[in-house]
Length: 371
Ligand code: 5GP
Image 1 (tube, rainbow, N blue to C red):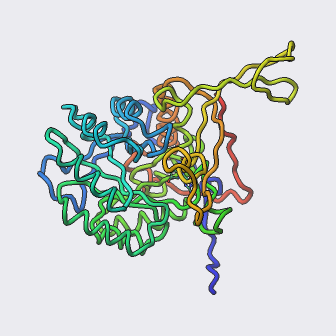
Image 2 (cartoon, protein in one colour):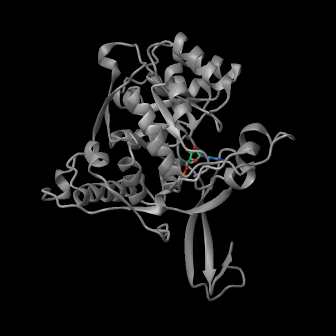
């Protein structure tokens, strides 16, 4: 047994120090990023990514076709849920739509069945598919790196996103195995219970700093996945070196996620499902169900229940219903632009170079907005 003594940090443990800046207005801040990918070997023209590097996670109620189209219009990215049938994916990726090609990833696991489904979609006539997100809870298995190698060899003209890991050496291993973008985060998710259930994890800000350093040294990229609860957390992730930030909970509860809108009634701190017997209802609020993809709810929905050797590593919660995603995006991007003006970064690309983090000592704990 060993103990690492140096402190590791989460988003809530730091703030960004304000600096003198020549920026006149938030309008001047450029949030678009341009990347080309290390291991992609397709056409030269196809290697380029340009967009606002914020991603919707491949979670139920978040990574839907509707979300992908809405976000792509705004320059943002979506990883689709794994559960779409091959036919639906073929139809989606056959549409001659540059937004879908440039801003949407197919998500997959690593079973033989997953591989066969991917092959069927990729090879279907008319399909144009550039990004594939290979997503497992624990990216540390040999089988996972072997799968990435196999995928890279078989499909040189795709951009491979692979995760999740939280340390530099495994980021390097995945990039050297053929991944272009490594997804970073074990345990920080809003509906994740891995830290409670297993005791495993890594504070997310430090994981992002460590993995970004390793990836950038090899010409790779990273996604900070999970743990963002407010626009300031995204700014901290970018400032720590993340090339992309992936969101689940902050994108849940919107029309594009497709969940059923549920009403709850509130009276003097009590909550009820109906107004029966409650003549003096004080407040009515709307919610949408949201759950982790390893939760019992997700296992029930997609696999008919939890296998007997597994335990759930996700929670099920109600999140406030928030209407159309476009309004949330405006608020989010406004926050990040403002960070850039405080830090003196005219481009999101420069935010990391312009940032000095200050440790807050006592934890800075933002309250998640409920509107
Ligand atoms: P959030 O933005 O909600 O904080 O985090 C989203 C991320 O949490 C997802 O992109 C995914 O990596 C992770 N996640 C989603 N569902 C589960 C789950 O059931 N268990 C765990 N451990 N992580 C999850």
